[in-house]
Length: 533
Image: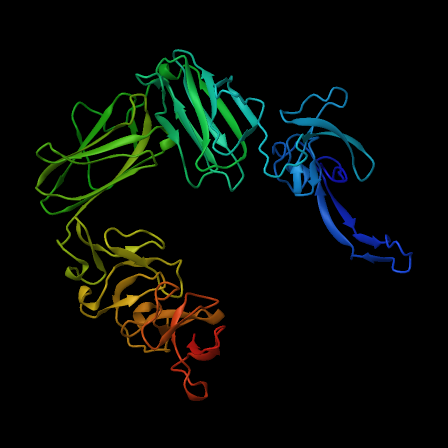
């Protein structure tokens, strides 16, 4: 159970310094007091924050101070396994505690009597306590519009809620959470399939956001919406749910943009913002392209407001490409087979979707290619498109058999799309197939710096050498770099781990510890003397 009692509490919503010392006494020797001793720690200072209005964390959520927990009277309690939130309860009746917990009287270090809900198991470690809306049969809990802050989800559990709606209403549902280890997704169903199973056609599933939102200005006259909240991966944690009923949303109508008309609207190769898709509509646009040109078409929208579908048709009316993405946008890139007018169509993934969006259209010439060695400098061969600019953002994925390679001394800097290779014959003249720290081989310009000589980029190094980091100075030296436990070094070299970078294939030290260039002789854990950065 909670050890000692509650942590000392300063006045609500205020911070107060707490000075403390740990005193340990050993006085239980059965032979007498001869070996009794006492040890005292230094005096420590910490700051405690009053409960205030509470931080919203539910019972058994990990905490460091009471200001993080539920309401104003919910305390951060000490257990054997750490500190976790309690929940205030009625001193007389014990009411106010969720299932699998009970109201207990505790005494703070300053002799104040408090009442907190504690888990019946005696520990919060590994516990996920159900909230007030849990149902054993996974039936949806009817809720009126409002904010519900103290909800919890456990492992692979799915929480279901039912929001009643009027014939002309829309809805907005928001799920928010703060635990960085938790990734919740949100789905809404307005109708069922032929077998009676809910169709979750409206989703919000961002990988990087702590808020998921689904909004529909008009719900199409249904009597309610089924809301599902679930973890992307099994996890437990707290979240808040906010439900809004958009009264009369269906009657408000939809403000169409200036490109609406009875026939497809011509658009230039440019960025066009402020476009609006209305429920039940299909927006159509046309643009011209010559045979052999590259068409790059990005349509962007907020998936939380309704997913869109994008289709591109050729001059002969045949479908060229289509995308049906449940995310914030879709990209189509293709090489035009014939000259003429191409047609872009944008429609809702479901009939009720009404959403704003933007179109980013580029039409440009690009030389045809079979491999990057067919392209000029600062270009790479994009399959099906042609020779394109090889610039890429750090960590980006290049299309085809290419790797985004950043400068050796700044892996967070933008790089260039380099062709993957097995040998020099796959590279352009002046390039070498170099082993990289990622254990991939890529075609890179061949430099002049030899083994152990200084470098700033892989392209500075001669032959198959790449640029390895040299110690904490963040400078570089040219070495053979591709090795690990499963990929041995070439004959005569040894794979040597580096504390500040990737393993390198290192030569043995010469007589008297001699090493080439800026390399230094160092004894390895194996006992070998190797030349390393």
